Image 1 (cartoon, rainbow, N blue to C red):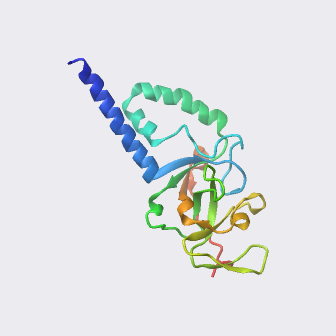
Image 2: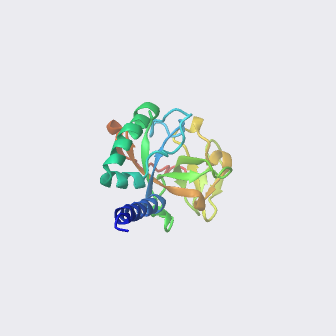
Image 3: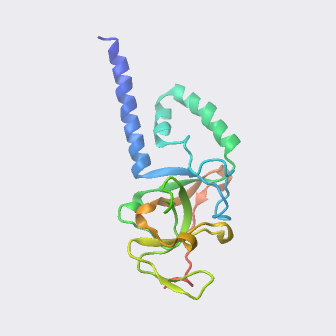
Length: 201
């Protein structure tokens, strides 16, 4: 029976770390690797063939790496190769504290699920909030944003699929606010808020 104690301790420790990491990733923050050109020049992006989020990085692994030398070796060998060979664009931090009471501001960059395909996620800039009156781009039309919705657009409007195509999106689709570029090192910075003052009333 004594030989099982170390194994039980290891399993208990691993499960605790995993649950803690999943909670952080699900409730507080996550990491995205960006693709496409819709948010240029705010973000540089990787090959369109790479997924829109970084599956290889999670808080679970980061926490485990601090306690398990074997896992550190795994991260060094595999994750470093993934980053250096496959990712050429920005990796960003998405915080989720804002979701508790939908604490957003005009000009924030947000991540959200596609209104037509919830398996896809986009990153765009928040232009207008519920109850705002705003001018629709390239027209003289004025639209009031419905309650529980917001209007989003890409910074590179010529190459962006956004609210100009699918209309205001429900706030319930928002996954978090993009706060920082965390990779590559030379581009590490806070994501600036840009408000379209001339269009929103």
